[in-house]
Length: 450
Ligand code: ATP
Image (cartoon, rainbow, N blue to C red; front, side, top):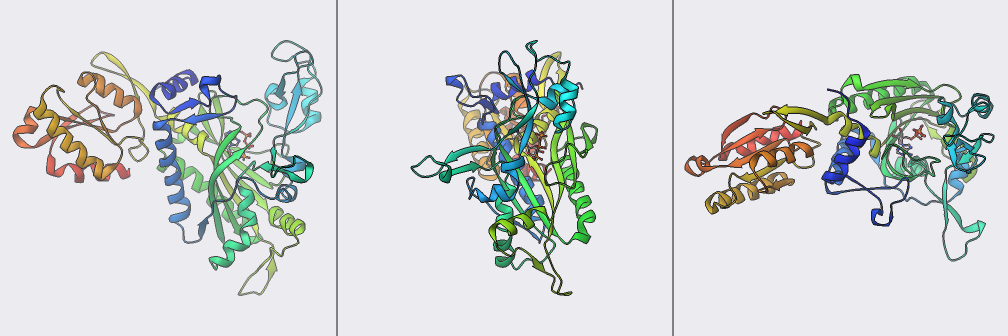
């Protein structure tokens, strides 16, 4: 199967209610998107899978949900105010701004190297480029009635901030001993120079992040553990094939200002292999700096040795939107059934927005409809996301459900009335089999755990 194009993914997303342009009736806003009825289900399924795997399956990972706006000293301590920037270059005629590294086609933040590479290059409009410089991506606003520097605050550019500021709170309230982790799912904001590739690079994003606090001697082992966690989550829980993934190790000019080592997992997106998930060794950079700026003691005392030290941190960080785009790209398939081409989303049943669709074979036969309504009500009570679908002929209904990834379609026909059986049609194989109604729930339940 060939990879879908971005146009195919964008078109399906809009047509079927996964993703809409934000404030579309006003022409939208670059770098902002809304999730539609199906998208929000898929997002929620991805988030709860991650929360399960990261927090609930581990004894020593605790969750928090921090505020988006925090005391700006936090971002001074973390180095974001000074260093959270991307290299930017300007078209000298149109004054349009571009990511210098993207125009140069390299992964580096080094301005000298970029200036060299861009020396003979023109802007996409064919004009001379200015000198590359750093552009800070923090979004800012003011709290309270006066818009002066004292009231200036930032929308968080990553969720990690409130994890570090809650290190002591979580350690003390949960009586946590090293190693332990703090996890969070939440919105972050980055004033990206050129938002692009649909929901891949946006200005309002959602992250799933976990910071794992350890002693310095455990760095390497923990780093490997969380790299492995990311890889296994994507392949085992999200159904992404290993062939679609690759590792990318950050070079020295590419790493974030706090990182000693960084490995990204790249996914083969429609626009090419790009970063999906980062694992970073942030060393003791964060807690040391928060201790310095806040004046609070953020050190840890090891109970057995009595040694006092500042914990090191391994970070695992993935964007929800980038994960959704990867899952849609991976699941998108086309095949031909009865000489008719179909688009099918081969989502894992645990991720599918709708688990089952229920249809009466004919919608103008009241006895079929009322029996089908009973089956629908029972399944809805059991599985929640069940769709009633009596629109168009059966073939059309199947195509519609295939496109949104519904794993099973149940049809009530005349035989159902005679012997209380239903047909279940499998999305991937398109095979139909007959089941007794009283076995239906127990037949379906284990499938949705896959
Ligand atoms: P990139 O190099 O693509 O700009 P990054 O290295 O700055 O990403 P991190 O700061 O490591 O990204 O953020 C962690 C994760 O958050 C990324 O792996 C990605 O999944 C997600 N992410 C970061 N920036 C964006 C964005 N602008 N839009 C959507 N997701 C993002």
